[in-house]
Image (cartoon, rainbow, N blue to C red; front, side, top):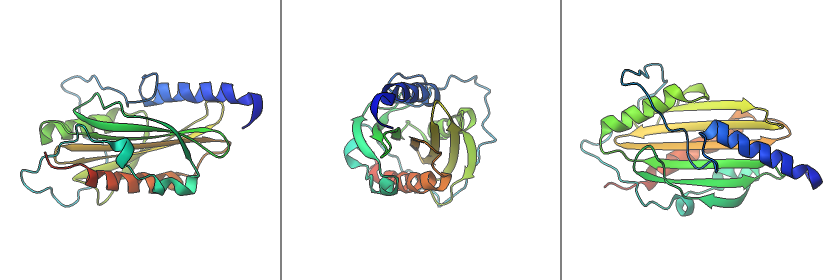
Length: 212
């Protein structure tokens, strides 16, 4: 969109990020979860892959994801980076980057890459299951070949324009990786055009996090 129409849809997409990504005014973090001790996440879809080496422990704190994440997988979407925000995740120690993007049509888009490394594997598993159980996004099923378990989610909304989201989260030992891609437009971006780069970035991000 061009001309005087810009401000209203930019305000709308900002509100969408606030509502859908977790109540944070700048969209820099996904929702914090306050759950009862008995909360169960048994319904989260997962796919097992190769087991993590015994005793492996990752440390993501201080990782410069804004500088390290390769955006080449987004090339087909023709997105331009407007700014980045390296506010770390609040759910556990780690690192993150929110890439604020714009499409050729002038619509806003967002890519958030998050790496969290709780102290134990058990804490990472709980974070993984809680995220999958309580997200407002719809489950797309397990993602084979990523980490110890991985699942995908999607969502479509219309906050004055078409807004399509895709998210993959992965648990590997004590490491949680989350990649969330959301793109606005005059029409919804097909799911596969979001799923493929999201998976590619998630897989590459796993390789970026060193052992502690």
